[in-house]
Length: 410
Image 1 (cartoon, rainbow, N blue to C red):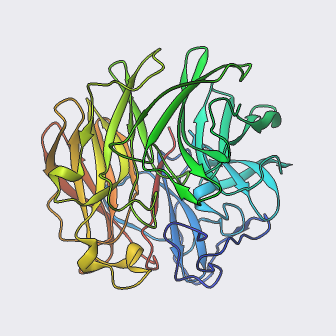
Image 2: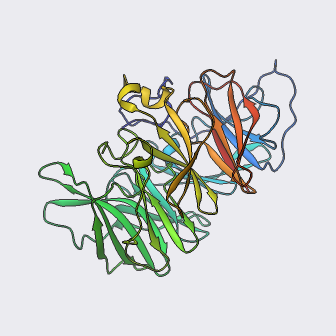
């Protein structure tokens, strides 16, 4: 595996190896840069990767001007060391540092990322996260990539309240469970997982589901299996993979090679589970790949009213010539899908662009960072789904080859 989903070109990223650095915060100040106005209580923020580190900047207006890390921002290279271990709730950022064995809480206010508290953390066998779920406003649950372990942290008091392995009930001999999604369902948790044969070293091409009582985390019951797509949920924690709409939770499968489950022959699809239910809806299966010539997709953001935005890897057999092409080849398309009609309703009017999962939603409009290699910079674009209108906004300067990540803070 690799350090970040899209930071291959940096010196501190080691391809196919886990690496991270100790937690410390420094500010980016350039005496030669023009004075800038500090944004107090910003609505949005962006993390921009540069040749000199990654900087978190406040943004008040995504639709005008130039956003640049020169002269302001917090250098988060040594704070948020592993993007896929980042979890957010409003202004608060939570992060597991895999090398320093720390869980940290940070708050972005007054234009600066401030350390609230850090605690020792080593409760998982691997500290590279695969998923997370908010059980309440103060209870954050997360688990390591592709295994059966979890931890729950009270983020108000910064205490690990419970950790361990999910009950192995229902597992065949010499098999392990790989959890990909955890969905709170009242007094139960809905688990979506895969099965791995430890003897043959094969991960089955099926999606499995179970429920377990909460908060006791006992009485696990296997509730079903489905062979149409897998894995059911995210392999990498920071990837958008589920959302709630009109009484259902919709869960995206991520079979994409390298960035997902490594199951190129399986389609990207959406399943759903009804509130309070313990099984997938047997009458619902949205095969997205079938509508895009077999291409696989990754999630960007939920827009509202049953619509979500995805990025689609177009014709990877032609466009992937080396490993880093998964991040840097101009082969990605933005799609709008409707889970109610089970249709890809639109491909946004961009040329093929670089990989980006950077999107936020505000007042029914989606804002995305688009890395078009033919443009004069990375631009923020606004998509108004109600008006079906695409508008170019602010330009982000100073970025390296990776697409800046947008965050909504309110």
